[in-house]
Image 1: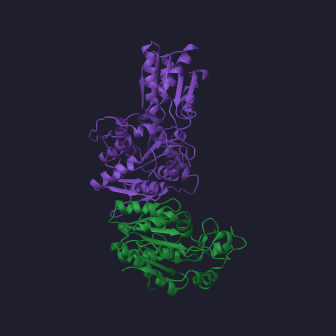
Image 2: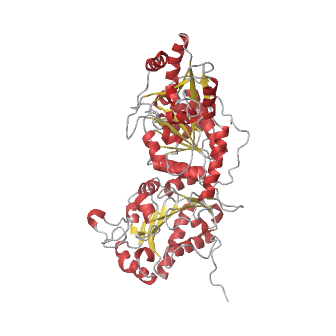
Image 3: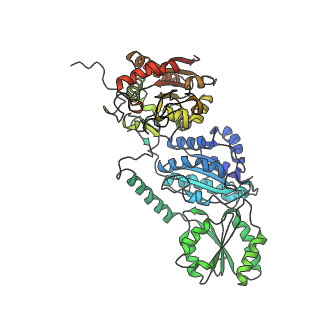
Length: 353
Length: 245
């Protein structure tokens, strides 16, 4: 099963009632898979007239109180940003899959990581954050989609799965285990629109007139929630970082490519490790700083399929503990991936200095 | 003193933020009356548009979702799919429905979503202060067509009922007006029909209501009523454009 199909199956298992689709390469396997499976399961599948309509359908279904998902790739995610801003402002949970391809514009249909800023800095207008999970294998595509529904409902925020063209198209075996929620209890959806029989009317809104008490209070509330998420949810993984002199920072497909090169160096006795963020927001800054503090004089090599976006988070989180000259970057920006040989060479250049 | 007609129970307020002479207040009242008569307040979910009616949740005593500009038919589609037993009312103005949300309304209509749509056509963008709308008449002066709308470069006003009538899955389309007591009564009947159709599972039903915007048109309320009679009705003829029952 492809990563994009695992995403679909995980959604069904996690109790996703609605999915709103629009075709775009390299994510179309997800709508194709769900068109068939959701019909079998008697769930709600709808191919929308546009990405804009699809995300607004997500907004509606979420406001109606059910688990809902949409998926797309970079240009389509750009179109969804208006809706994502409203979903964040309206404090609605939902899951959004971005199988990132090359950009800007139509770019190409190869894997890329140029949407990091868009995912982690908001993307749409206004002061909001989305939780961003990033898988690097089919198993994680499956697991993280389930996690995403839980996190969305628990925190009442949109959750983005930032996959890429490689991970989405990748076929590999994985454990299709049953859904097990990561929280014991979820807050009740007593805000949902179900008709006001026996209760006061519910209103899902994003307009807060009458400053300063309206919007300022609303944004303060969101800020508190984002702080809570940052304190509770920084996911990352390390590989051979304990006594590493060089730590490669990479996520998604790039982290797998980097790991191949790291293993090769390790077998030659070079002390290189890998730090892989699994949440791009909240960024695992505390964990990265800890490595820098423990490994005196360590150098960092940031590898991305972009011209340097996650690099900014690495620089920001390490600014007080690592000299800027010790944070190096290797990126490919054209919707094409670095090779293990290329990464191996980059690491060699650092060790030779 | 005898009360001849009380305020509808589904309306929460006796004062709105609508300008004097605006048609939205009349339409709100008619919706409230029909909702009360049909007894659907507690199963109703209303979509608020972007425009003058955005704070309709301050006036209507029911569940409301405030939508992005033009997107209500997409939002409503999802809510109706999730809650097919609930009553979904889509309330949109002309900028919302006939400009920025053209794709959403056409495709919701084409899919035959079982929803009720109230389309308020006042030939201008009211909330932002009287700019040219897709329904602005030829020659009509607005802040963004200061010399008057011309066909060349700006096109002709869009006739929404006639446009949607070409889609085979639309079930009921009627254009009414609120510029006279007679027309207000006809509008109420049309709203009732459009609501009843959803309750009976008939399918996509819309009433386009020609409505006054004295402030946007820069006319006194009395002349705004005449503007509909003398200027709008010839281009936007009243009547039923589709009734498939």
